[in-house]
Amino acid sequence: MRTLISRFLGFSILIFVALVFLYPFVIQIANSFKTEADAAANPLSAIAHPFTTDAMERIFAGTAFPTWLANSVLVTVVVTIGRVLIDSMAGYALSRLRFRGRRVLFAAVLGVMAVPPVVLLIPKFLVLNQLGMYNSYPALIVPLLADAAGIFIMKQFFDSVPVSVEEAARIDGAGVFRTFWSVVLPTARPALITLTILAFQGSWNEFPHTLVAVQDPALFTLPRGLADLVSGSLGAGTQYPLKLGAALLATIPVAIIFVVFQRYFVRDANEGAERG
Amino acid sequence: MAGGIRGNERSAGWLFVAPALLLLGLFLVLPILMALWVSLTRWNGQGSPFTAGVPFAGLDNYTGLIADDGLSRTNFMTSIRNNGYYVLFVVPLQTALALGLALIVNKRRGFFRTAFYFPSVTSSVAISVVFLFMFANGGAINAILSALGVHGPQWFSDPRGVFHLLLGDSAPAALADHSVLGLSWWDWISGPSVAMCAIIALVVWTTSGTFMLMFLAALQNLPRQLDEAGMIDGANRWQRFRRITLPQLRPTMFLVVTLGLIGSWQVFDQIYVMSQGNPAKTTLTPAYLSYRTAFRDFDYGSGAAISFVLFLIIVLLTLGQRWATRERNP
Image 1 (cartoon, rainbow over the protein chains, first blue to last red):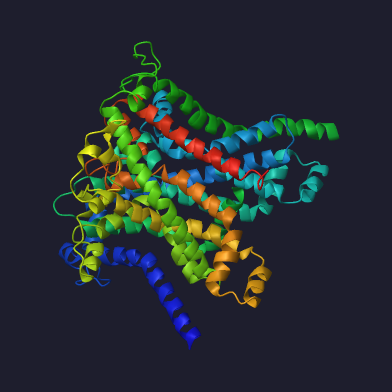
Image 2 (image 1 turned 135 degrees about the vertical axis):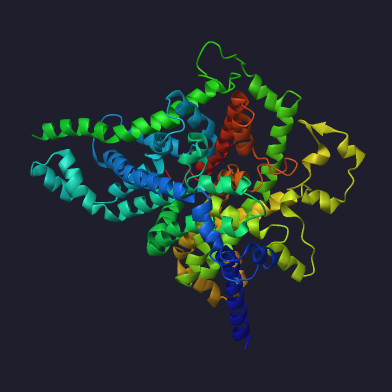
């Protein structure tokens, strides 16, 4: 009897906590399809009554959402490809290639990882301004192309993989680049997938960098446009269905990636724990 | 032949790291040096800060934050107070919640882990929009509170500090009349404002999933024998948790707390989207203040100086963490 009660209690707690973590998303989805009056009167209700796609239509017709979406896709694709290439090359070199200065460079990468991103806001603006890049696509993209954490992940990965295959390729006379491209990279698939996911999620969600890189609304990405939509005034009323709907659409790509590639997300967090 | 390969490696090594080196140098190291210079000037955003016409300020921007009586010090100290209370609440709450979640999902796979971790991977801006709606005056949180018979506050327009609310409305003269570093003692002990509490709730909710995974990894690496030995000795579940599991989690606990400290001194996105430092500057944080000072008030020197003071705070926390964990990670 006692175990039954404690089991029931444990399960109730579990359900309650799961509700706390998931219900905000339920509220978000439901209210995206409500009328403004319904959203104001019944904010907690999980059912839109009446159901309307009015807010969704206005997101596409009445806001610059399509522009933000296009910019986000462009930035995310270029940054993800760039990071995967640049980080894996640097991680490989730091792990495998013997050259003078390697230890110092790796120490520098570790140092760079410790720099808190928010203190870089003004500095990044200064350099973009000085280089004449401010308010352009390169300003949105180029500073995000390399990240120290990605280099670290790739170096750790190559450190953990035996060298025998490459050595064989080397002895066969393949150059360093050939070996890297056609022997090393294909074996690094798990690490590359992790890196791709992290780069995708990071650049899709990136917000503060856009604040100091661009000011022209035609160059806004989704997080920047969304922040602008929320803090600015767009016509009358609170427009919550519209804002929640736009936030929902901005969340969907990462949600899909998350569900499909869950185990890679989880693995990265565990590596973070070991990294200390 | 072997020498040829090694020689090849030397140049290839530098070629392979060159793109990363160039990018990190150009957009990370160089900017910090540039900002260090700007923090010593009164540059207003016009033209280049590296010309002779820009007035040199020496350490004025720094003393203005810490030593000289004036608005910049009041603002900066207010932001330190706000972020300090934010850290005081966020770090213990997210650590406890993360540990609790990890214990809940430790023996369960799949769905619940996904559910608890999901908020961590979503966009900070998008999730802030959802919480703005939930904490709106007629929003979901107040609807729940009124169902429980509590009249909810107007979250984002309520600047009252929660410690002030507990202590009563009027300030004792002894506390109100004496000030230190530009704020009266009464202002220093305000606690987080009601508006800040909403932001604290959001951040605890989003970050605890990440830290849950760290606790989970640690829990699954614990040897089972110790727990079984405790069971044989007749210890109940709470005793086993308190005396056997918790002591073994100490290194992870320490990691989570320091990562939490480092992260929570950087709160920016949520402030930008939800409150912009309002109401009555009670959600102003150093990160947001530095942004606002530079890009809204065009006082780049002072803004950069705030960044560097914040940098110093975070570096000290990081060094503290590295120092304390040095034996485990050589």
